[in-house]
Image (cartoon, rainbow, N blue to C red; front, side):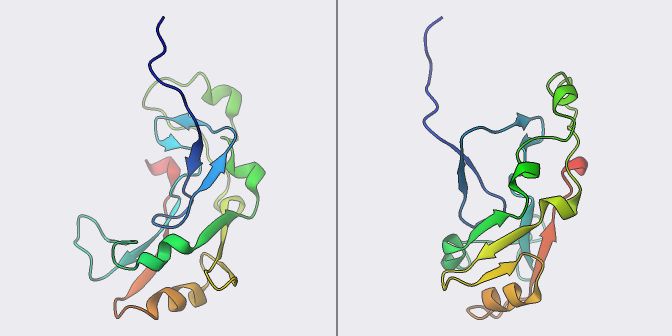
Length: 141
């Protein structure tokens, strides 16, 4: 069989429009990469079909570095063995949302929890838009 491509690196983005993290391995299933874009910020000024506050509205977001508090629980489904044999269209079990919490390092070096209102205030400083943080339940994908 001819080689059609080579994977040079694997990246996951825990928060939409923030920096990603390079991984040595990842679990990818029907719902996508495990732990990818679990969090995002929504904006009241965004269109209804795409309610997200992104790096397009504030380029500085791309300089924020999210990190899972429990990286070992954000690597693979809690039912890994079963998940490997799931048929197409079935999403594996994700860890408890508390185990998938993210802390964000700001460009200034301050670390803030993803659900801390202070992070929204930091992001809002450069914008007049109403911003909210949002956790995406992977089991609903």
